[in-house]
Length: 183
Length: 111
Ligand SMILES: [Zn+2]
Ligand SMILES: [Zn+2]
Image 1: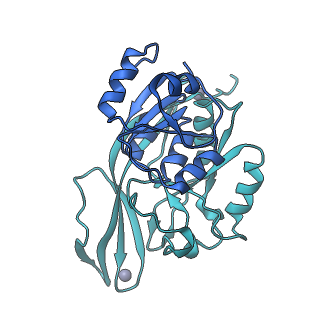
Image 2: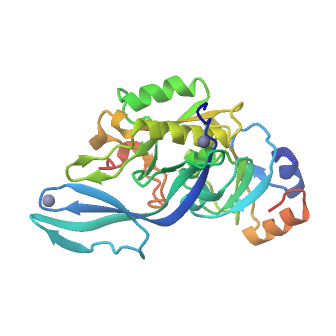
Image 3: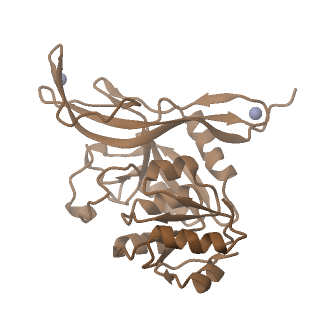
């Protein structure tokens, strides 16, 4: 049987929050998604040697993609959100690819997995390709295309000043150069 | 109906550089997550949100244009980013409710 040329649609949309927690003991940052009521900023708890405190939360959503032809469902619980590259660091791999692709009218967004104390969780590349396909299938690609890249490609995450496309900090109009890095 | 017809019929003020596009529906929200989950390609997006994050969001869902209602001032960085991506940012002094009334009377924009 020939393989299905999947045609994706968004399904199982859950609205909730991406919560950013920081440990003031070891400086680790963790993020997770919750559909529970608004997490309280400053909420603290202890876990082993760590003292976690909620430092930020952003209204967000999670979704899965379902193929309308074969019914296959791909889950995206590991996707934290998308970052718009502001071209903040010249030698960043994302910015290099951004400039190459934008010349071909392909706009990039960087997909983030969740951050954990023991390192970042990346979204597997086959899933990024599925996201790319989904966003292109639902747009007029004669005008422009979308390419979803992995946040692994950000050369220096601790100095990245990209913009999360999240419902938080929307009132900030600070110029990129004067802004604190995101992590 | 395309962006240019709409601008003329409703007296909207174009702020960014863009190519006219066909409009096939209207989506109203001030939340980016809502737009990313629900707006469709070719939709007109009505909002009072002017932060430049509306541009990558509109781009991702392939919105036909963004209309900033209630006469909210749009930062220059939002306009510049929109011009780069060919996304129409239009503004009106009308509150969303009144603009929706006029849009509704202007069918064939459905939904
Ligand atoms: Zn399929
Ligand atoms: Zn710790």
